[in-house]
Image 1 (cartoon, rainbow, N blue to C red):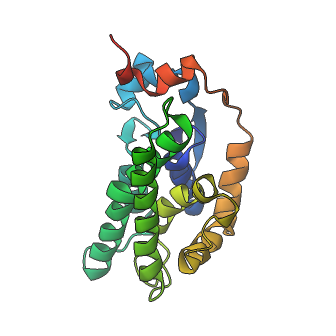
Image 2 (cartoon, rainbow, N blue to C red):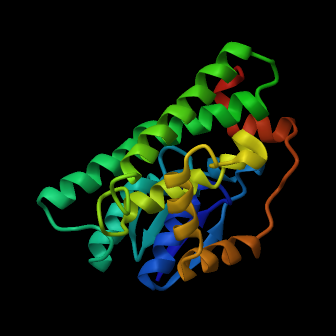
Length: 225
């Protein structure tokens, strides 16, 4: 059975979605990152970067959400085409999410909602990059059913994890400025696997208070040794 070390945040959610889509046997191992549980030696042994998610597949550990998506796609032989043109397109969009949408969204969250200082330049910089990445995907989806083409894939799952935060950036408007992207997000969100993933997440309880303990747990590099 696959163990998914999990916190209720975008990257673990896309892995939870993939596990549900594939119908693989798994169990969730909660890791409360607001309490610093990701820094426990036993966890760091599985995930050297001390971040969720990580899976343990009967002794095979895989960290980084996009690596996990590829691993599970190969294991289940689903949601990723074999080597060739279609695979190349999938990898392009998967890593667009990994290297662009994901980190810029994360930094936008940080400077909009977590940074102890009000830094207008940083807020504008990262929010504008989120908008730019949304626009790139929206243009793509004007001419394709899914990010990687005509088939639903792990690229869409990877994007879905972060698109769930759209209202966190843009309030009630959310994805309304990007109708094609809104369509994709709605289609994934209404899939039975996505509904089950959200239900599984909602059954867990994590710390919500953003206090000094949480700040030190999430950003230990900001403090002197």
